[in-house]
Amino acid sequence: MMRRIKSRAAIDKVPRNPRSNRAAIIRWSYLVGVVVLGAWLGDLFLGGFFYLRSEGLVLGEPAVVAAEFPVTVRELRVREGERVEAGMVAAVVTSQSVAETLAKLTADLGARQNRLSELRVRAQTIDSILALAETREKVASDARKELESLLDRGLLSIDKRTAAVESEFRSRQELESLKAERGVIEAELRTLQAAYGEAEAAVRDLRGLYNNGKMQVPIDGIVSRRAAERGAVVRAGEPIVEVYGHQRYVLAYLPTGNLYTIAPGDRVEVKTGLRSISGVVKRVEPFAAALPKEFQRNFSPVDRQQVMRVEFADGNDAPPLFTKVQLRSAFELPRWIASLWGEPNKQGSADNTVTGDLKPALP
Image: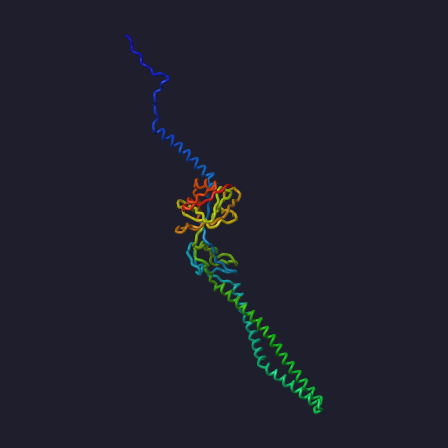
């Protein structure tokens, strides 16, 4: 009895086994992941060469409450974080040096005032007798001339003429002495009055600066730090209270040697955490400064970058003072390529209101 032999498939004819959709999705997901990872790594290490990527601090216009002389703090009327207005009393102080200076200047003013009074009395006395002295001198001169005429006719002895000459001499001497003294008194009065006015102005200015020990806030703002406490002795020029104005801005540090440029008027994004705020570059300083300690890298030389000032656009709430922020400007490839070829995209620049109006340039 014969059995049928089972047919076998040809070796060169493999049956079709199409791949499943799941395998294709995995493959494309892997390729996309590799591309995204490569783009992220490229942006991490090379992105800073093509668009703005920097850091900065949120600051305000600074001002300090300080004395121009050594003082002792008796009372502090503000606390850190408090909003203050210009003219508000921040601290009450006393100064032994100011008290001694005021006492000395006041005594000097009193002495000069007494001397002025004496000179004025003497000047008035001279003015009152000067006319009489002039009349006396004229009478003596006329009498001498009359006696000389009598002497020439032989009607008068020589001793009478001598007495008349001596009387005229004394009258002229006293008159000229009074006139000279009057001139000296006038000059001394002018000098003393000028000195008295300067001393009086100095006392007035010192009293104004001292203001009875009340140290006032110079601007509207927020108290950032109390540099001294009650009972502390503060030297001249040392701050007692530090204040920052309400107008906030970002002091940013601009890396140099990159493929872009930043100019006043460019718009950037100021990021703090998940919050993004629009800002405008107001000024790019022509010098580089050392970055703050929190921006430096450990075990590396001190890094210096160009300084620029960024102000927040109208309608945006600024972050708190001393907040560390990141500055970014989106990189627009078509506009960057156009600028490299000398054909800036004016329309794109005009429409860019969120990210930066960067002007890439060849190194």
